[in-house]
Each structure stands twice: as structure tokens, then as C-alpha cells.
Length: 153
Image (cartoon, rainbow, N blue to C red; front, side, top):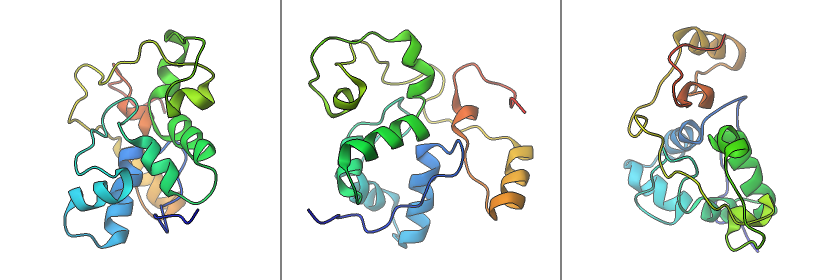
């Protein structure tokens, strides 16, 4: 199968999915963000602030390589899902793309984190550090965790 997404920026350490999608938008040259979202998620409107955004499996399938491995890498590396993992239950039979690699259907997963919808948080010290180390700044997912008001560094 040929990949429909020919490039997607590699992830920086602790980078949020929103940040990766935003970098893709800039690099793609798309004039409208909804065009970018439609290219990646096959929908014009996706809530990137959700713990696991809807249609994330479309992104994973569109990237080169194994779709299940792509999905696992994105969810564990760029979403808040690992933060919730110790607190969620799972059923015995997998029925969703997310559950296939997780080992069972997730029985409870919040769609949004209270107070986080539409808000993106950043740390000026981390931005400066990123620019020095990587040549650009990005949004860290750990700054998006519920209840976090101060950078861990």
C-alpha cells in the first residue's frame, strides 16, 4: 500500500501531537488549517486537544510503515494517553484500532481534559532551550497535562 502522507515531521522529545500537526501545516504550505487536518485525519475538523484525537488511526494508516506501529508511536509519544494509562480499564476483546496494540478495548477514556479544551500551555524556558538544542521551539505535551501550572524543569 502506498502512503498518502508523504512526509510528517519527526517528533521531538515530549512533543505534543498538536505541535507536530502545526509544524506539518507550516511545512505543507496549506493556506487553511482545516485543509491540513483533512489531509492528515481524513476529516476537516479534529479535536487535537483530546486525550486521543478522533481519526488518529487515519493518520497512522496514511504514514509510511506499519499502521499499528505508527499508531502506537504517535499515541505513546505525542498524546496525553500515557498519563491516563494507569487509571483506565480495558476489556478482553479488541474492537478499535487503538485497542489492537493496547491489548484490549479501552472501557473508559475521557474525550477531553477538564479546563484544557482550546488552551495550549508553554514554558518560555523550554522554548529557549528547544531553539538552542533543535533550532526551533515546539509545544511539549507535559505542559498540557491536567493540573500542571509550572514546568517540571
